[in-house]
Image 1 (tube, rainbow, N blue to C red):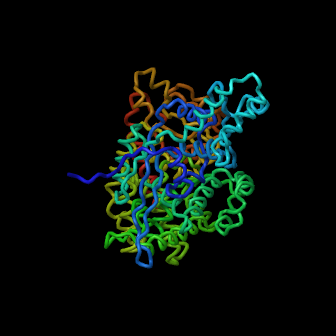
Image 2 (image 1 turned 45 degrees about the vertical axis):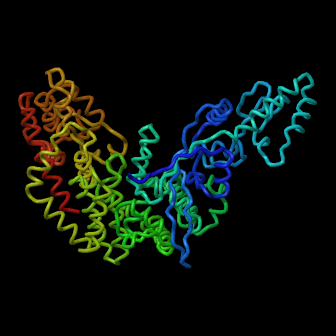
Image 3 (image 1 turned 135 degrees about the horizontal axis):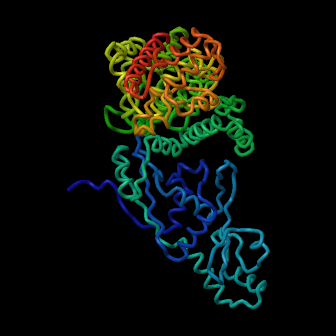
Length: 598
């Protein structure tokens, strides 16, 4: 008979709330914004009043840990599902303050009408109406006396039936006696098993990520400063996206804002660069991989729990050291010089806009590499070249596409074994040989997906080369990308559609070029042999209609920069497939030169 991996028990709500207040059950989201609306809190209370089911809570027990003195500490339980419901109960019943979506501390007050036996969100009208208990938390405070309250209630509402008031108040206060289901997962389970159990029990198809578990583990470990680390991650990521959050943070969490942790992120208040706006998963992954030399966040959860991988036991020394090590990694991540220099390196590859970056993990590992090489004291010029090449190589090979954690783990281990540059060179030799540039990449460019990383990489190559837009003399690809300009079909889309071409063929990325809006409009739905007659005439003194190119040499250079076959002016619809084939080869050759320049 297999050992049970979890237990299911029913507990009175009052007991569950007491466990939370005493810290026996940790709510990792308590320092994060409460996302439920006030009406949802009201509806939860109404469900409890009526005896309706409100779902199960799911808690994951921390493993028992061996303390430094040789004794064993019982692991506390971390609430991994039901956080919003419990927080709603804590604010409505226990009077606890919560953080709203703006990170401001607030109370959600729920009012109760004992005669009608219904709840409502507190408002000014209710405040003036003596028939309402304006805050139900009053009824659950230790010194609340029902008979005294009913007496005063009847004084202010003379025509009220006293028995009805007693009945309504008794019903209200009995809420905390209602049973709440608590599913407790065994502390020895690994993350994959916990995730599978969570999904099956939850029944909503919800997915908890490795980072979710890591953040829960961090927040629940106040002994090692986990609550401060959790705030550090949350606040940094929020400030990176919204620098204006700085003033709200200073006002709402003055204690944290006087800490060393806050000073290390305060530079973000004046930072508006959005090329790399990390979320908590990104920040955790980079800090962990660069500092611990591992790539799987389940290992971070295990280490923060004190896991000794050799003895398979859990030890306080390992947990304490792991929290300290994680903080070092986060400090390096947040360091203004590190962060800004890394972003500068990425910009130098031509990736000037976040719309060009399809995979956040390509950025994440590039930052891991940067931080690792900096820690080794490698020459800055070598760091810049290696990071640029690694970033672009990751895009070209789709290195972190299908199973990023496994690849992160593999790469950081081999970097530690071989050194960063030798490992990069071995990947280039294995995956970026002549066969890749002449055949593999050309084949990858045969796609109609406009969001293709290869097309975005092509645009980055054009930006780095300071290329002019298609048929433009002065306007660059950079200008148009940054201003969200037009993506033009060289063989116009409507022209191809009218001739029976399906979307998958007329939207080939080899048919795309960055173009000025006015040029796009002027071309309309005409095939190249038609509209290029006007372009050629323009270069020989004719009317200027296409971006001010006024001589044959400038036109030839513009076509080369945009990888357009030089015989485009002779092409009809019958040449479309030949055009695509030729342009893919030209684009691949440009990308090869671009990579060599990094």
